[in-house]
Length: 246
Ligand code: IMP
Ligand code: MG
Image (cartoon, rainbow, N blue to C red; front, top):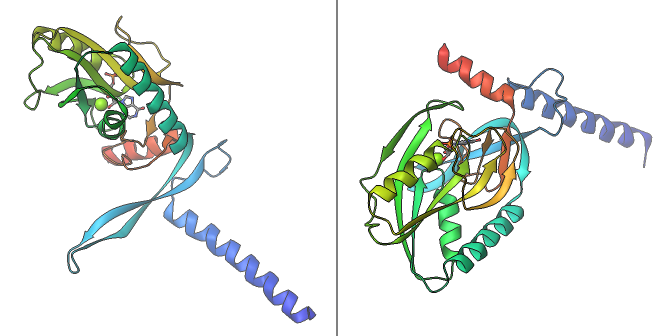
């Protein structure tokens, strides 16, 4: 290769590295200066928006966040299959009624219910305790969409067992509605000090006490559509908190 051509491809290469660096710094202002937070990397999340002029869905905006993958799509799938098999063996010969806690368990419910080979009834209940971020607040429940649970074997399905207050409260609620039995299944069991004595009967993964997003779990209503589970960098959470205050 002639010398001049080698110089030109080297400078093209260096220029492309420079452009990538500037783009990432511009799109991701919260990136810590050291950029050395172990294991975290910049993820670009595409947000689907309807293109009203053409009537088609397109990817029109992006979010760039620092996060690190905790569980891959394949690992999540294996965990959900495990959960389904455990549930099946526990409820052999019975009809099971699933009550899924919205909105976090939406993705888990869709996958899990198709893997359970039992006669199945499915309903939902709404519960939320995260007010504007990552700190657990007052629990608000909405049971208008709840199906009849009287004399039925009920399995509460939620995304994560954190303080435990949601499942504890909903277990009691379903008991007062006359359920024959109430058990609970979660995808994730956060290893932290829980605020209640009950524990979920089935859980697919134990995870460290960090704030996670994806596979239905959100931060400020975003990231539920990530197919994997990721830990959001604490600097991102802090930045969003400051922004909300200002
Ligand atoms: P608990 O009542 O504290 O156990 O919290 C249960 C609810 O809080 C879950 O159903 C989730 O919606 C939410 N939650 C707890 N931890 C996380 C997390 O790390 N990321 C996203 N949502 C979470
Ligand atoms: Mg929830």
